[in-house]
Image (cartoon, rainbow, N blue to C red; front, side, top):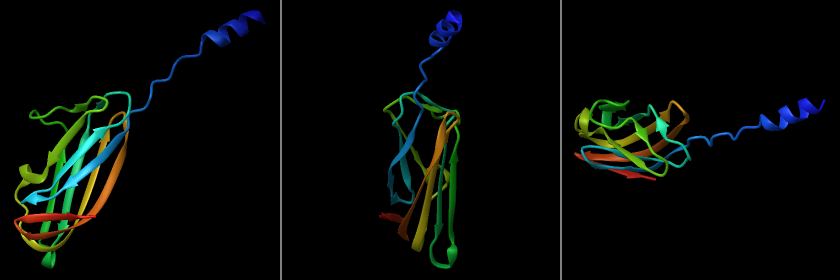
Length: 131
């Protein structure tokens, strides 16, 4: 019985804190929408995938989707307390007029998906994000 108690107390291991992503900012701009994702957890976020979708405008002619899952041009991880920025600019220019819906998501292999949905307005090449 003494062996079981000794083994039971020595087997407790410290659990690693989870990685947590947060979408801290979504900004409009000249022909694009940019997103800032921050790692607010204690571990490095690995294999990050960020998705930005902009839809709407008059007659629904604005339909842009940018998926970033670690191409050779950027890092695919975020250290604790660091940020990663992604923009729709690489997918093409957003041009149109009217209200738009902006949907953003970010996830990592060791973090749950976070989503944010915002409204905006396209005025030619200018995209304005409203709260």
